[in-house]
Image (tube, rainbow, N blue to C red; front, side, top):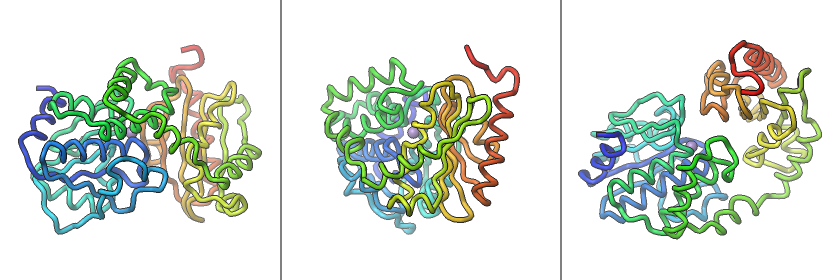
Length: 329
Ligand SMILES: [Mn+2]
């Protein structure tokens, strides 16, 4: 039996589910959580969607967002489902406890760096988004996809493909997106909420960030730094820097775009995006992170200037490694 068929089977056979996703959730994390959660509820199951923090304001429009609950560590469930998590710790400590108490733990994810921590692991690094895998599972389980479920899964795919721009935009991903539109996914509503509601602070931050854009000697590495000072000067929050790394990557001749984000004085989040050949999952893994070949990240402790220097040196080293692909592949 394929992993998809096996997971569909588990979903149909049990009655009591807890679902969660990773901390700092993105559109795929929430779309997968809400899409699968609403599907299980519509199939008459008890399904509780939990997260340690409230759903971020940007994603409140997603159907079912109001049904996400705080984690109750006392509660017990037959099946725990972790969505879009490379590692169970990504769910946060409390959710991890609840998942591990469940009789059966299902890990559904598309990160190449996934740790296979479940009793059943439905991991497909070829999938554009975890939401794409959820669609396959629901199709297999013959659970009808309502417009609310479709809107969530479509949001998952739209966000993880950068609106169908990234390399993970496969024929299958587009076919799935088309099916979801047929099922009633609200394309315009999603676009409006995700891309036409930016705060003034986030645009001011982008302007200042772009002014400080730096390039290495051969022009293949570009980076931007969002320090705490820059945030306060722009009237922006850390969340306002979402998506800025794509501007770094967009520069002609650049293979790797890097965004350094100072979360606090001792901790910096680093986001990597590559265009054609550098495996940034490997690069991020060097600093204890991971993700995908073309999009990955890590969190590094220390002074931001030191982190910048070390990370850029490592990136250049990886680019210099023979057979890393090289231009033209
Ligand atoms: Mn994802």
